[in-house]
Amino acid sequence: MFSILTATNFLVRIPPTIGQLSKLYELRLSRNSFSGQIPDEIGQLQNLQSILDLSYNNLTGKIPPSIGTLSKLETLDLSHNQLTGELPQVSEMRSLGRLNFSYNNFQGKLDRLYAHWPD
Picture 1 (cartoon, rainbow, N blue to C red):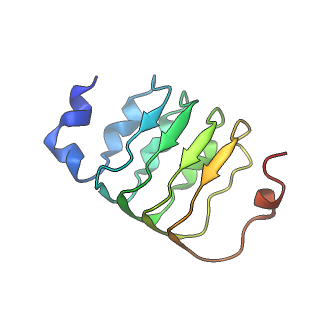
Picture 2 (picture 1 turned 90 degrees about the vertical axis):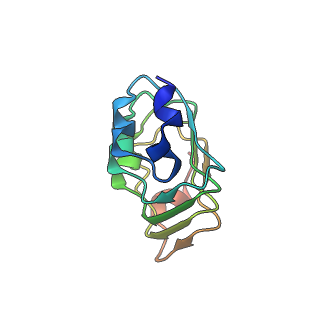
Picture 3 (picture 1 turned 30 degrees about the horizontal axis):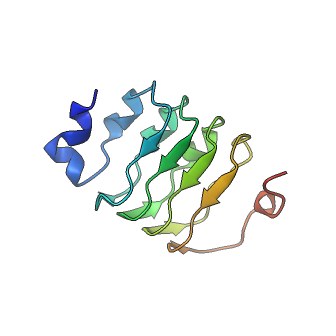
């Protein structure tokens, strides 16, 4: 399983095949100089519970809406990237206790769900 994390093509972009790692409990890929977009397939990691940390990379584009379906996730850190667009819906992320979107290039208004988060 770990050979996927050290493959040459993995050093530049996060591949869509990341979604096939369905038994992952946590995923920490911070400070790896990843570029490109976060693949939508990351939303297939429905067993992620502890943390999804993609901070301190060079990720661009919008946050895929599928991230908002990770209902077991406790910590989401996408800080220190070059992400744009609007923030994802978090209504399905019932276990989320820590959220960091800082140091990106987001635009627009915050959804009212963020004002009451966490309940």
